[in-house]
Amino acid sequence: GKLTMAILNLLHFPDERLHTVAKPVTDFGPELQRLIDDMAQTMYAAPGVGLAATQVDVHKQLFIADISEDNKGLLVFINPKITHRDGECELEEGCLSVPGVYDKVAGRAREVTVQALDRHGKPFSLTADGLLGLCIQHELDHLLGKVFVEYLSRLKQDRIAKKLKKNQRKAM
Ligand code: GNR
Ligand code: NI
Image 1 (tube, protein in one colour):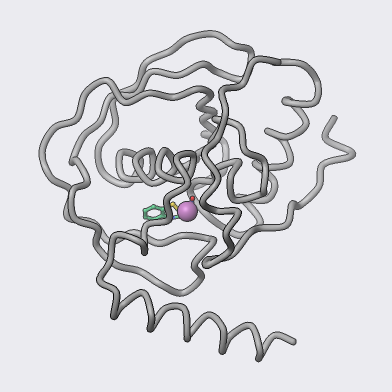
Image 2: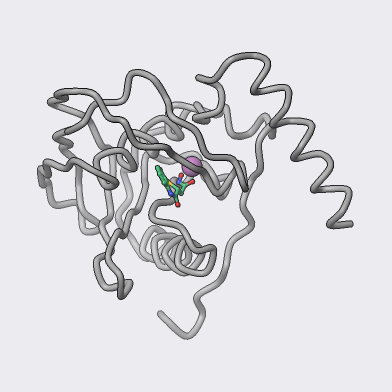
């Protein structure tokens, strides 16, 4: 229930656990409901527009997103699959697991259709473009063990790793 919601610890690039491939969800019981509520609280607190279970070290095929202004548009995607992709996306992306880094990733579609289950296991399909379309592709990558900066050049990745290490030292 809401009284016991918690902010979960986020994994940060280059943590090896971000490379774990998520397994399908089979149990839609209270433990999953609790995880979804905690992930939502964690995403809103960050704040972010999406969060994959991978980022909180839970390796199940689950991500959430909310691109609304008032945090009342929570979307839950379980065992998601992209069934259609179209065009090319030109937007920059960021990631809560790589704080302060924003860049464009080649190969993102402008519009995607995703098939998934909702938090109760009910199938749905959604077509999205813009920020939500990009977010869906970004979260699906997390479930496959991929972080967006790994699509950037080696030089950029080395710079990012150095910057994150420096920030970590400052935070200690
Ligand atoms: O909060 C987030 N913003 C964002 C912006 C552009 C493209 C993707 C995203 S997802 C990110 C949150 C996150 O790290 N999700 O995994
Ligand atoms: Ni991310």
